[in-house]
Amino acid sequence: MFMIILSAFFAFFALLLITTLYKATYLVRQAEVVLIERFGSFYRILEPGIHFVVPFIDKTRSVFWTFVKEDARGKPTYRYSELVERIDLREAVFDFPKQSVITKDNVTMEISALLYYQVTDAKAAVYEVANLPQAIEKLAQTTMRNIIGAMDLDETLTSRDSINAKLRLVLDDATYKWGIKINRVELQEVSPPADIREAMEKQMRAERDRRAHILEAEGLKAAAILEAEGDYLARIQRARGEAEARELLANAEAQAIKIIQQALPSANPLPYLTAQAYIKMLPEITKDKNSKLIVVPYEASAMAGSLAGVKELFNQQ
Image (cartoon, rainbow, N blue to C red; front, side, top):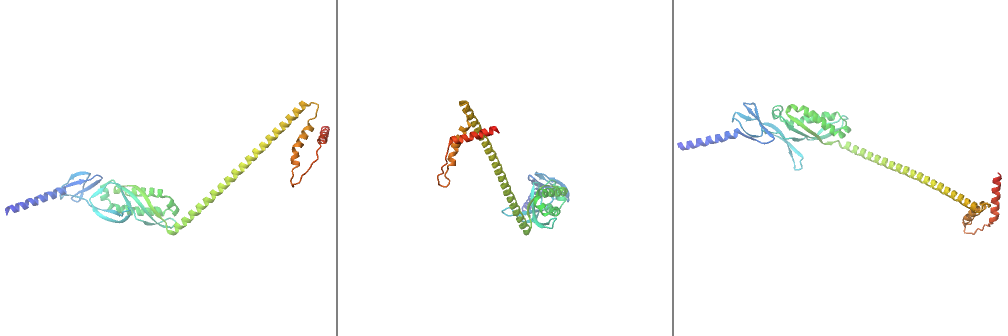
């Protein structure tokens, strides 16, 4: 009987020792901390590594923490809260659900956002606020309503970077005493009402059509200008060519007269050149335009004499 009682005592002592060691030993993983309280007040923070505390005197501080449950596609499905003893120091992302906001020009639309934050002071995150993620969410929602309420619809749709920067600054300043750092705030989705979206699509189509007409008109204008410039340059080239041709022809005729004068110093070259020109033009004069033969009598001597007489009259004049 005594041996049975002694065995039960040793078993109880061993169980008590194991429980005490279990309660006194804490293994803290990397990027997390544990807060220890002694007699109900804050005592110390356990950093990553193995730690020993006084059992039944030192206790961990548990806090409510809100988590987001996501589906297979990464979309948030629901939120839940549970007691946690270990505070995660890694950067966390909080996906806010869609909320209705009213712009400055009284347009109601839905906006969802992503917030990236990181705990920098675990003691402040536990003792300065209850349920830190939920507090951040509510503060972000009210801040977003205030910022969007000071902007009109067009400014809201085209100023996402500005809204993100304003949200981050306001939230970072407001949550500093909670021991967290707001790293980024991103507007995930901005959904105006259906009638507003339809009106915006019509406006966009009209704007695209207007730009297309402008581009087409500018193209036609540029083409007309280039065509006019090309015609102008072509005319200039033709005029220059005709001038050069006439100059060459005049030089050739002058050279021919000079050669005739050198060959026949006492003769007049004008009757010869006139007769030569007349002979060259004879095919054109006798061309049959109405399928009939036209015969033009020709007397070169008479014509040459007539032209010589005209020359003498010009000389007398």
